Image 1 (cartoon, rainbow, N blue to C red):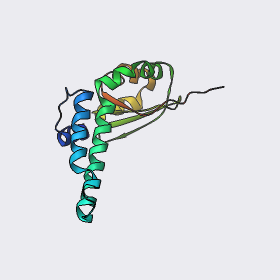
Image 2: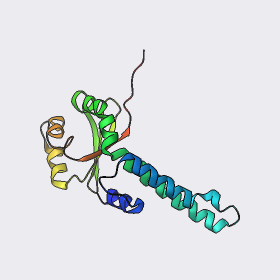
Image 3: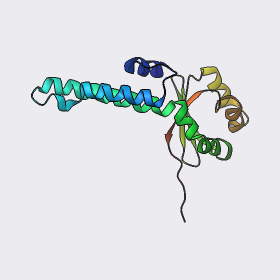
Image 4: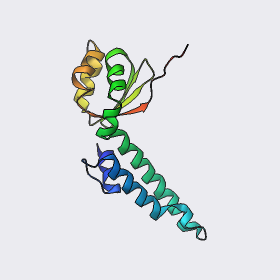
Length: 150
């Protein structure tokens, strides 16, 4: 959750900010600190490159967790979480990454260590995740499901 807060603070947006506002803020920042604005000064150009990388990362991350993005991907998310089983999961710093057998990978933010331990010890990790994780935490799709075309 710290990462979410840091990115929002960096871009100066709130939890309620929509995709239009995020895009406008992102464009304004990129106009200010684009490396091409400093062709003569290498030091400023390198500084602008670093800042623009951070801004791009923050923008893409916040877009991936926005309610509008999640609403547009809800059908795929629901299909994955209801029909595909968990192949693996990792936990680090209140971020739970779940890999599914269909190739999808989702990150869940703000997951307490207690919830993670209960997931590890659950008789059915899929059932536990459906009840306590999938619709309870901010999430983002890290990779898309692989569709088999024959």
